[in-house]
Amino acid sequence: LAEFRSNTSETIWNELLVLGMQPGVCNLGQGFPDYSGSRVAREAAAAAMVDPSMSGINQYTLPAGLGSLRSAICAYYNKCYGLHGGGGGKKAIAPENVMITVGATEALFVSLKTLAGPGDEVLMFNPGFPWYLSTTRIVGATPVLVELHGPDFAPDMEEVEKAITAKTRVLLLNSPHNPCGHCYTKKEMEGFARLALKYNLFVLSDEVYENVTFGGVQHLRIADEEGMFERTVTLCSASKLFSLTGWRVGWALSTPEVLKGLAVYHHNTSYCAPSPLQHGLSVALEAEDGSFEDMPKLVEGNALLLGDALKEKGFAITQPQGGHFLVADTTPLGLKGLECAKLLLIHAKVGVVPGIIFYFADPKDSNGGSGNKGGVDMDRPLLRFAICKRRDTIEEAVRRIRAMV
Ligand code: PMP
Ligand code: GLN
Image (cartoon, rainbow, N blue to C red; front, side, top):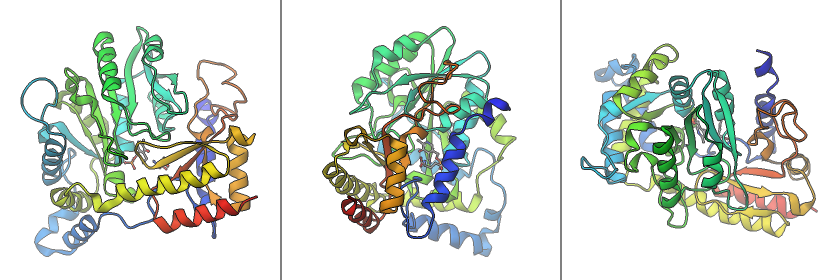
């Protein structure tokens, strides 16, 4: 218990959320859209809830999820990624490969609980989504960190291979990456697959931003590499796909054998995701033409607009290839990330997340890394801006940042 209490990243996260929500703050902190999310999904869910002929929709679904949603997910993935029954990777998915969860957060939790435990090591990248480290620790496994280097934050395969030990069980991947926006290339995918097969690793692949890629970049799935389908759990989310973070619906894709393991924990935690919302999502997925109401285009434009303004101000920018975020390095300004986040909040009333939230102090280091305050590396010079916002929100943030002296 003491170990979890000493991890202050949750505390900092919660404090930042409150600060970002203060009146008058232009909130580019937590990654949630400030637009309404899929109209088709919302209308279908609302109609189903009050339709007397669909009264069953307000009751539990099977733990694996609503049949129509699992089928719609299969149809969507098989079509969108050209999955088929033949060999050479790209194996088609069927409903028994899909488990609906309460967001990707639950899918992450039940997957790690199933795949790793005390004595096992989970390889993950630093920086990364904070939940990876905390969930790994909660399930009793040991996080092992591989540093990503700017400005592009692409993984270095030699460093990944060096970090693998006889105890490594799981390789945790995330593309498009939160916070850095890197999308794995085909070469990187092949590299990960080679390592997973050589060292007998399971891959937990967080692909919640799969539909948000920029400049013609194609999202690639590790499960589609030859030999990887059987050793991958893919995590997906309606929070991101349809901009509905409050609905708390996500899904895990894997083999029926692996999903049976996840189902034990899913059954004993949430049991099932909200039924009418699953229905709404099944209708939206069936109707989806791949444009997602132009949300990916909006986010890409936001990245360019904000990136230019930050460059003018002297930040070093990593233009994202996908995802919902843009990271800026504060080093050229002679500031630490946390310091700069405070200045932006106080002087420009723009809420952002300092990179310290995404940098884990090395858990093996008893001092916890430089300047560590209980699991958080305080010295990192990064800032993260959420760009999954309306254009006028980003324009307002740009005006405020430009006006800062
Ligand atoms: N993975 C990543 C990389 C995320 O940024 C998030 C944040 N939403 C999640 C997982 C969790 O998503 P959900 O809202 O579906 O729980
Ligand atoms: N994925 C979002 C982010 O990184 C929100 C995560 C959360 O607050 N659960 O900001």
